Image (tube, rainbow, N blue to C red; front, side):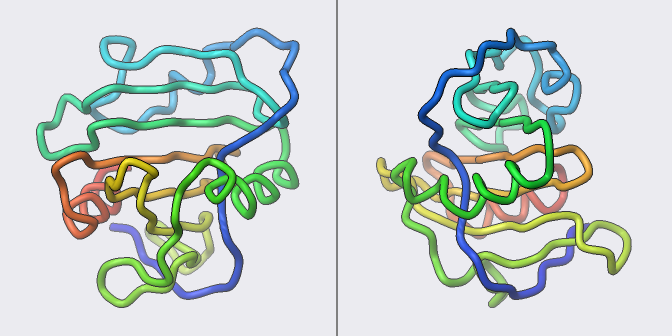
Length: 161
């Protein structure tokens, strides 16, 4: 179960400079359930991201229709990209997530210690989107739900991601 608390800030995704390092495969090893090499592929990372993985429909039919995962070398790059990336990536960030939670907001898993931030958004195609950071894994995840509601996508994220 994931807990969410309100906080200030913004978001994740677009980087401009190319990264010279080839993917190490570390990010593929930390994907949420239903994502694997069967429906995900490593892509060239850009900007401060050191790895990038994109995924098609989750194997759980109630899961996301698309996902993007980014891995960073340090917490400063992670925080900076989470704050600026979504708007640059064409996402319209909402002021709340389901349950009246703020967006963005801190989230925690199994304790009161903050694990990262989460925000709810709408993609440029109009799909509900959940974007979150995981500070211990130096990872950002973006889940889009074609044909889903933000409530069902947020529930999937809070239970499985």
